[in-house]
Length: 184
Image (cartoon, rainbow, N blue to C red; front, side, top):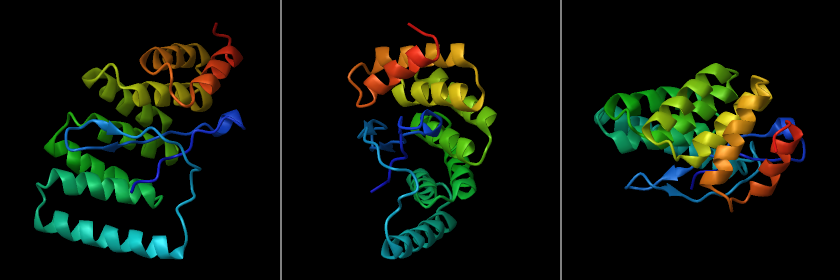
């Protein structure tokens, strides 16, 4: 099961992203949050490495296997191998550029390797495909606020996120951030 990256408002600058696993229909499954970087014990790492090797074998055998590329990206992301995840997600997007959740996850990986402008670019592409994608909206707000220091734009994105997902688990924290950045 994919680990979801943290969304923690204890230290606002540590706001991170929540990535979602896509089901067969492309619908998002789960909107849960966990601590980033807590990938389990050594046994989990062995399982993760084994899964990565297996998925690399699958895509070598069948380079047009969209699901395998996405799963490889997800496994790499969960292992903190963000550059490998980006490579896998790019391969998936060559096969199907309209994979919104893949774009959102790839944006998160870009942010995690210190490329916030590339992250925003991916979130914008995701929102061009699905303007109602809540996590793309929130994640873009986070990057705007904490990486690019574009507070007005961040407030707009956070307000849009709350319209899309008013009862999200982080709604109260997002409202606090809107106030903190001068929004009403």
